[in-house]
Image 1: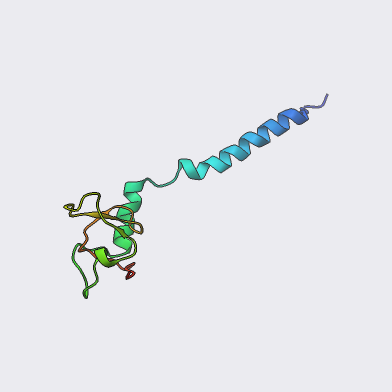
Image 2: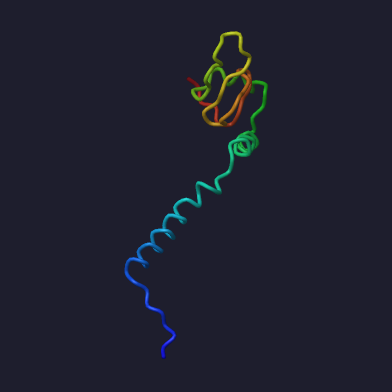
Length: 95
C-alpha cells in the first residue's frame, strides 16, 4: 500500500488561506513599538533641545504646538513625539 495521503481541495485551500493570513499578519505583530522608534528617530536626526543657526522647531513645518498656549512642548510629525519649540533636528523645514 502507498503511504501517500491525499488532501482534499477544501483542506488544501483552508491551509493555504491560514498560511497566507499568517504571512500577512507577521509585520504587524513584530513591528517596533512607538517609544523605541521615537528614540531612534531622535538619534538619527540629531535632535537637540536648543536652536541651531537660528533654526528652531517652532518655525518648522513638521512642528505642531501644544494644546494650551502656556505649554512648553509641542509634537513633531517627523520625530513622532514631544519636542521643545526651541529644539532643532536635521529634518528642519522652514514654514
